[in-house]
Length: 167
Image (cartoon, rainbow, N blue to C red; front, side, top):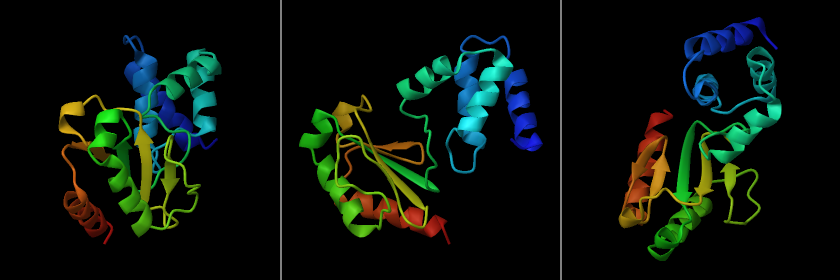
């Protein structure tokens, strides 16, 4: 592991040390500071060693919360709710539209627990069980921002904004 990365993680540990729920905050900061928005294994093992936390506890936290990722994400990330309310209001159509209009390198065709990234690594598309915003269905999240009542035209506008940001 690079010394630069070790120093970065040491700083994150120092920032959160003694705080309630410190480990969660540390993991959030490590992922946020990663250019591919994920938690590399070497970073997690270093964190476990430095905080004297069993790696199994760290992995338990990561796999419990849907906002953590163990694999690199694209520059932009779209999460589509697959909950019942969103599904009945058209989230599947939104999912299908994106899949039909972008080239994803690892798309196996399933929808249940989707996590796919475009070949150019610009966009990651994933599904989540529920955002808890059922009254706003269908709901999507784009780069951390929640959108409700999304239809195909709104989705097209959102995708144009993302494409404009990459130029």
